[in-house]
Each structure stands twice: as structure tokens, then as C-alpha cells.
Image (cartoon, rainbow, N blue to C red; front, side):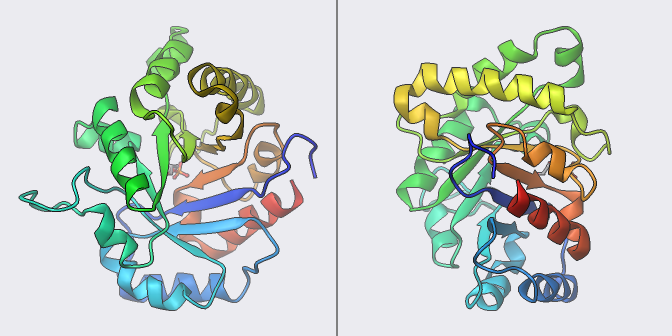
Length: 251
Ligand SMILES: O=C[C@H](O)COP(=O)(O)O
């Protein structure tokens, strides 16, 4: 166990827009057989349509249930949206907010993400707020500025959730950030969190996401300040996801 990380790691599987009932049942069954309460915290985030099914399937297990987004309001005229209390009613404990795919495809701004994080917390959900730079921003050396602004803009006062650092260029590309890049960025993010939240900023978990797989998980998860991973593609394959969970146990 590395010294800096006294708390339990968390491995979050973001299924994105994947998973009809047959696939979900199969994947979850494979996880139920192998995930136990002694390892890292494990959360799976299926599409909204699978939440009720997975709430039942996961209830007797240590695997938590997460959602991929929520609205900032608790009800109202918001066609197609899902309110935080609707998620808690389905046994959801975590919600991913501000994923770059939502920022890009749905025009979500830092302010929107911040309002959603407030609403999620009020409903008893743990927000997992995603931040990350584009390839251009990293190449031009603007990545720390970008991340600093995202932290300032996306995290509300008194933030009590998790931050996921996901360089956009590493998402779904098979090209994870190097351990040096991750380590340097984690140090920067920790400083920014402490600057914004004082002592409390030391206890905000930071996950890495972006092409985490069964091969690179061990080296990434053993880095200081990496409290876990937000896993996309590899969370859809039971064997790969279980290997990542095993790597977190050993980190
Ligand atoms: O939410 C997960 C991230 O976008 C990472 O996705 P990926 O593991 O497929 O690169």
C-alpha cells in the first residue's frame, strides 16, 4: 500500500451509451461473482435505462451504482432530463458530471456543471466532476490554465465529491497519458484544490481517466494522489475491468 493513499481507491466504470438489458445482465453477473467488499470501492455507471435493473442486481453486492448525468433542478419542464432525486430513488449513489462528451456534445459549461454538482449533493449523491484539457491545450502549454479554470468554475463552494482528471486526447484513443504527465498534473490539481478549498482540498479524491486498461492500470493507480480510475471502454469487458480492480487492490 502506498504511503500517501490511506483511503480506499475507487474504480468507476462509465458504460457511456452502451448496454441493452442482455449485455448489462451478462456484464454485471461476471462482476458479481468476483468483486468483494475487501477491495477498492467499485461503482458502475450504466445508461439511465439500465439503472432500475442494476439496482436490483447489485443490491446484495458491494458494487455501487452511478449515473452519467443529472439535471440541476429537482423537477419541472425539462424534456429528456433526469433529476437527482429520481436517481437516488433508484439506488444511485454517484453521478458523473461535466464529462467532456457532455461538454462537447451538449454544450455544458463549467457553470452548468457546478449547478449540477450542488443539486446532486443536495440529493445525497456523490458528484464525480470531470475536467480535462484538449490536445491543443496540452501541446501549447495551456493545460494547467485550462484545468485551473475548470476547477474554479465547475466545483461549488463546499464541494464534497470526487474530481476525475480526463485529458480529452486520451479518452477512447488507446493513448493514456504517461505516468509522468499524470503525476505532474495530479500535483498541480492538488495544489489548486488546496488553494480553492483549504484543508478540505487535501481530502478530495482525484481519479484519472483516459484509456485506462488492464495493462496500464497498475502503474497509473500506484501514483501518489491517484485515488482511482474512471474507466470507459475497458469497463465493458468484465475481464479487463476486474484486472483494473485487482490493480487498485494492490496499489
Ligand atoms: O469516462 C470515462 C472516460 O471517458 C475514459 O474512457 P476510455 O477509458 O474509453 O478512454
